[in-house]
Every structure is written in C-alpha cells, then in structure tokens.
Length: 77
Image 1 (cartoon, helix red, strand yellow):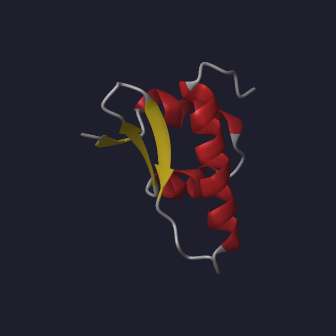
Image 2 (image 1 turned 60 degrees about the vertical axis):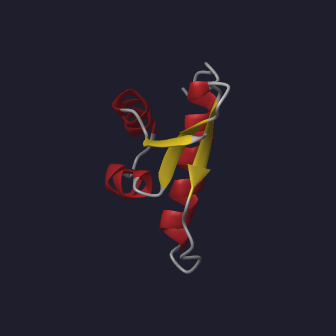
Image 3 (image 1 turned 120 degrees about the vertical axis):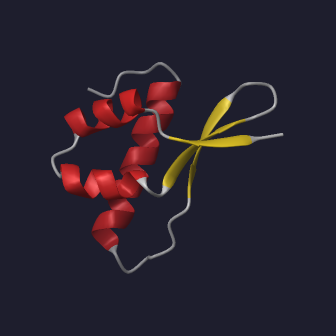
C-alpha cells in the first residue's frame, strides 16, 4: 500500500534557499506530496489544477523538479 506524506522540512528548506519568491514556494508546497511505494521507493506527486494561476503553476512544477532531484541525492544549487 502506498503512503502519502507532506514534504519533509529539510526539502522545503533547501528549496526555499534556492527560489527567489519564498511566499509562492510556501504556497506551492501545499500541492506537493511524497508518496512511499510498497517497496520503499519515493516519488513526488502534485495535485494542482488551477491552470489560470500561471505563477503558482510554474512554482509547483519547479518545486516538484527540485524535490525529485533532492530525493535522488542530486544537488539543486
């Protein structure tokens, strides 16, 4: 069974160090979750549907990308 969880604080902190618009990133975090599969692997899930809010949409996508890179052990700097 898969288990959804919010982004860990360490991921949020790393992303906030990277982005310029921290308030928008904080809002974007509300739409992003980590999902742990039965085998223990993690993947990133976003649930954002307001395609008219372009700034938030692009921030959600950027944060998803940064999160994927971080959980794979990559650097985002």
